[in-house]
Amino acid sequence: MNANELIAHTAVGADIPKSTAAKVIDAYLSGITKSLKEGKDVTLSTIGKLSVKETSERAGRNPATGESITIPAGRKVKFTPAKALKEAL
Image (cartoon, rainbow, N blue to C red; front, side):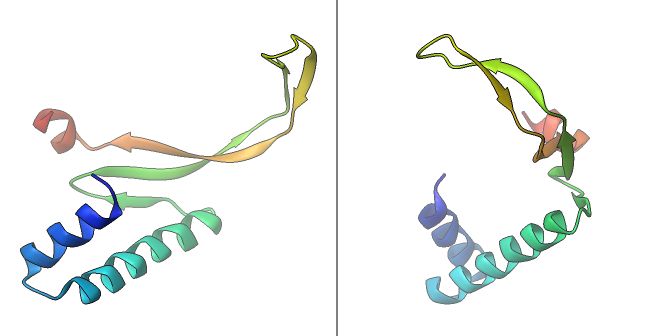
């Protein structure tokens, strides 16, 4: 499902115009992004939990040349599915 399909599905399910559904989804995703940037976990009870994981600097290889490179430390989003989602699949 892409963004347009999600907007259309939300508009039909909530019986609202697509433009309103797009604003709702944008606000929803903006809130999730803001929380993750602040280092806060986001728990959606029926879907799962999003959290920020700190990664340390590590060694890697350039696949094109085989040359050793250093991959810098960073932050990544980790998703842990909820029990309800696991069972639904």
